[in-house]
Length: 91
Image (cartoon, rainbow, N blue to C red; front, side):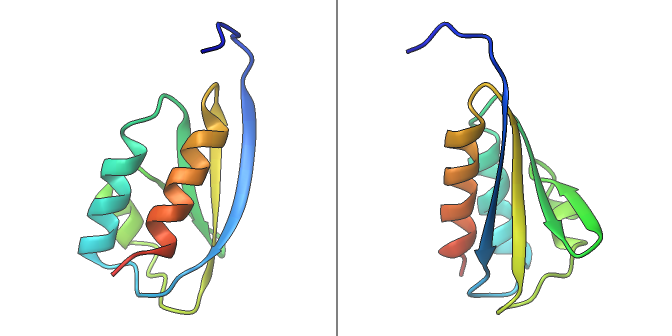
């Protein structure tokens, strides 16, 4: 593990296989909570904290939509990758 205190910002796009309803939103929140970085999911002009089920659901992102995952912090790359995986396998 690196002791570096450098922070980075990572943005990745993901195509949703399913609507972002309660079950995938809950799974996403559990994944995001494992990281120190701040993680947001962006859909159109709406932004949601990835640690809030209600905020994620309020995006109203539907199957076939592309959302942007933005992570900011010292483990941003890992956080973004984990959240993208959770979103891309949502059911």
